[in-house]
Image (cartoon, rainbow, N blue to C red; front, top):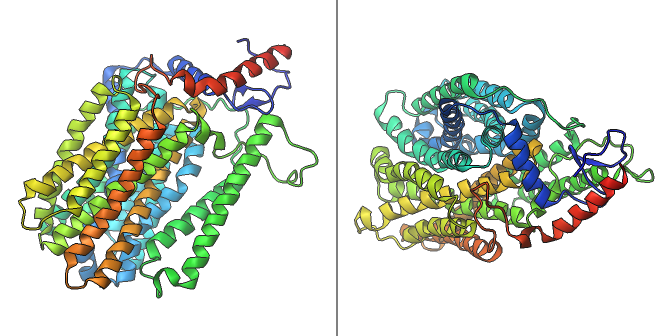
Length: 557
């Protein structure tokens, strides 16, 4: 297809000419994404590629470890800093609150101003704030620093996804890179819980030592990235303005919702507390306004501004997130986002309650708890190799369905657990299954999202995916906590029932995710290989749009 002349009046989607009333075809997104990535990617040495993967994977491990490691240290923090229960909640939730709510904005900024820049500055910020957490002397300071600490993670993770998508053209190497990066999420969660518990019990600095360790790992990621991640290429978007209105709406909405999820159970009247009800309503309304605003900007970007519109006095930058991203591949991109959300509801809620079960119900020390969770780290490393080898040969639906089923299996084992049984009967298979499931979903899901994202929106698309997992974590822990507390009130004499009820709740999330995978992802094909794309059914509707777009472009020549 010939490229229209610069004086053409044809509207553009980034650098993609399209017809009015048309979205960018899925077929063209896949083709242009692959062609442009291959064209721009430098033929790097094997060593450089390995170090790039090491830098971003280490960043993911640090991110997840920062989120999970304080949980196992809460009893020690409570004792040493004389912290009340309500303040403990903030020490845990401040980090995922800020990191999850700012992902979308920083994803857009990384796409515009450079992914290496975002990665470097984010790591510098994270190193400084993580070290600051280690020197905190009261709960308020620690909570505030934890909130600012999450800002660095919000800048780093979307940049990592964009860096990988740019550095590795569609190939086996890309599959290996994304699988390795994805393994950092479950491995980081297990690493933070396991090693964090060991450091708390065996070191003089107790809970502070976990922050020292994460500071060192973040600094190592920063140094590797500085030397081996390639310089940023200038953005190809003709309009580089930032949608600050959309950024405010989505950030404020997510902050309110995540805040409510963390505070609902500890509020004076729990979920019936007036300010809890008001904040959740406000949060939902802000997210609805964000979606409407993004659709408005998307229409303007594609069709031009209607001079009669009552919104014509507002700025019209490119949308922070195109809503059409969710409908690509016949809506399967949106389905994959929802599956990741549900799977993380199950996975990290399971890990949270498994840790509490070992320490509070069975009375195990942090070190013994770490030993029971240790298979998660080993399995995550092995699973990374398996996914990298087979993602280019196994249908996407199998990876997603088996991944969600395995995550649900971990919850099922703990829902049926017998405290008198040996560890190998319930604990060990659950630890293995949980990480395999999470790794399958995260690795194949990120590959799928990258395949259907335009080259200049890789970080934004990755940010949306990561945001879904962050919110899933908050929702999964919150809902299972509500169930745990209700059962504990009804059956105070049998605490095991409460732990099992929480795990049944996790299983429910896993079952819904598995059903979505089996029903909605059939026929997608193999996603981890350059030669394999989606099936004709995935692009049939978009192919019609492509033909109309081609005809309109030729008419302008």
